[in-house]
Image (cartoon, rainbow, N blue to C red; front, side, top):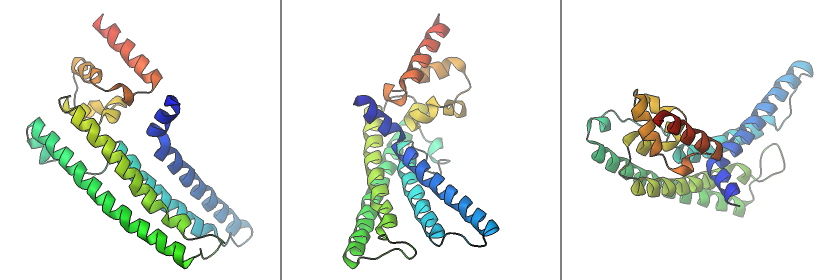
Length: 214
């Protein structure tokens, strides 16, 4: 059960986003093929593609929050001492979470209104909430991921800056953007929490560090 929860924690948004993306891609290809060969596509194709695109965007919001890869302007922040930078990053995460809560309420109200009015999709027999549910679900996941990030950053406030910014990116090669010294990279990687690894990556990383020390 723990492995399932861990897999969902790491992959849920990415997996669901890929399903929506490839569904959209497949329908677009079918639309192109149909128009070129038969002179007409599916009447519902474009609308479903729009719905899939909306889901990809909202799931991407939660994915970016979980992996700390939202676009940010950090030129001024990087000029400050590390502890000040960390405090600012925690503060910005709190602001982001507050915004997610605000938008979650707005999108949820929109979904409830659509349920009351029984609004239907234009080209196929389904509620428009097939699309609008992406809003509260995406922002809800964003809130959960923001809480996860805040708890992690507070608990690991004293870890090295690259790891504090994003342990998952550091694991996947992002450490090269911060550090060019192999010994220092190894030191930073030792501070990456166990949950940042899959079991195989954790095994490889630990044994690689032991060989270097030997």
